[in-house]
Figure (cartoon, rainbow, N blue to C red):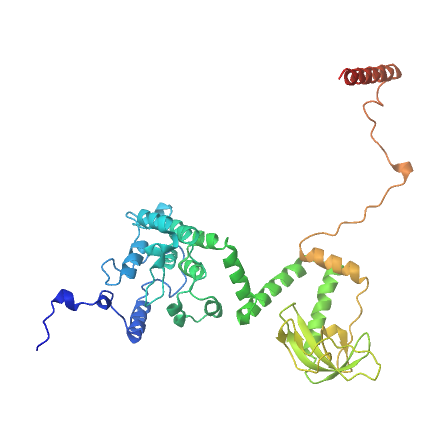
Length: 391
């Protein structure tokens, strides 16, 4: 028996309603988007024009919704100096306000680029919609459009990914960047990136070089001597080689250098030492096995390692450092200069014989006026007591 012939409507299944895009086609489409710079992300810009990579007639519903979010309002222009808004601003805002994270604009995600409604608003700098997606739609500003990350070449970009802050910075929307930087989660995320990886080390080195240049231009006296001493310590640290034999400056305990370089918990160069096995009943100078605050800098037996500054070790091959007198005063002066403050000079009290005091108004009165003033005070006091007695 031949199979019944199905109509076109019956032959169409539920899976055919949304076209399925294979992975290789996704990469081809993504390359096509990137080659023609459909999102305006190939270079940093300032206050750039809106982009419309998607069409409202796209077969994918998600792209239709993203096209509505990204379409600029009529009569838009940079020279008008007014807030950028989408042509469908009211519809998008009302939907997000009413349905929150269940709004179709919050759920829409492009399967090729990974862009969401929040990312679409960031691309074109629609500040009101960005606030609506984050505050009303409960969207996470740290969500990343993963497919776009394959085109990154910067270390910071690879660390953070194509999130809302990166999109706004790349497109030059300063007001949107200021709003995102007011969110605690974004600030914490930026701080973690700056403290990890090569990008963080480069940023810290650049900040330290700028701080030192300004400090040396303004500082003088003991604060400047402290900074020069730190330069000597840095140069001394460069001459310490791994595997060399040194001694602790204070205790004279012999040790072997196992690490020389920066650490995560402080600035400057540090030296990792492995002490020799102590004598029976002798003091133990080590503190750890080369692991400091969860990171392993070198390997040694437990309780035999320590991390010190270059000035705390001595050897025949290392130049000696002159002690800096009045260390506490020097540190106070250094901190004051570093923060742009001036140390408060100690106030010298003048002898009592030379101290002059201004005469009060009562002391300027004559004897008759002073007596009248005293009687007036007594009468006022008597009236006050009388009123208290009546109460």
